[in-house]
Image 1 (cartoon, rainbow, N blue to C red):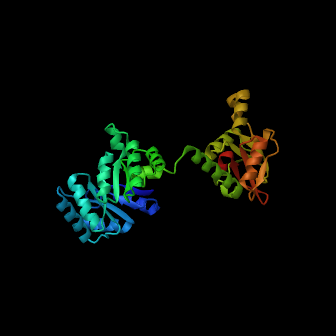
Image 2: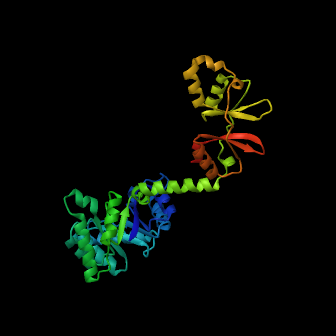
Image 3: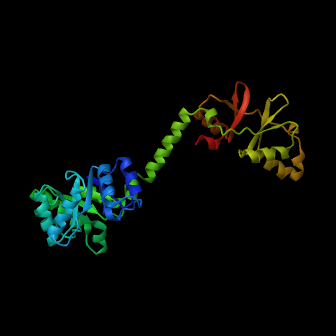
Length: 335
């Protein structure tokens, strides 16, 4: 199924074709937002070079004027091999389609609401027939039934006409088009971008990235550059200040020789305040009893750190490099 971008925003068009997803563009060039210095001819030529197929309007009330406008556009320098002329369905439009088709030019008959209109367009040699699914629904038509009828007609009678779904409102329309065997579809850029999105896929991708990070990133590379420390001679209030500045909810406690004696956490602070009130804020760190600090080497991988944090049921790990404390790893740093 050919995928066409439907857009009148030049920046959006450029972004879409850089992605390599759309096969072509369908647009009314006169309505495309563009810099004031860019005239319609220059814009048309730029767009024609940007995409492999461009579908543009050939305008006129009578068949002769529609054909004349198509020739005028070709005279500007666009390639007949990569250009499709969009013509609204009508008796004059069908006549113009027949003339242009006999000249070897491609036509897309627009705004087809019924199988009868589609049949006449196929007879006239239309390369595409555009069926506006959203607008059909707005007017009370069963758009899926109309599309299925047109696809079946082209297949049954051997017409080379490609059935194209337009006026697409959501990704559900795209799924229906694929299931019905529609040969082409025109989509706004926001819907094209959304085709790759799925909540379960997003969760799965996130888990994949997190697992990859755990297995490939070393602890030293995950550190935030924060190393909150206090000394045995400091009081609890000093530790509170360091915890607030570091944002990790813990500080390492060192002696005068820079040796780690323990870790003081916000949990320790809450328990002390509950038991002793605010007077404990002046208590020296050296007056407290600390458990042996749990640490990890800087060259270890995050997977090892995650295992230790889980086994020890802690939120922070001291990071050691050549016997020296270089930082603190928080459980949030794993993701």
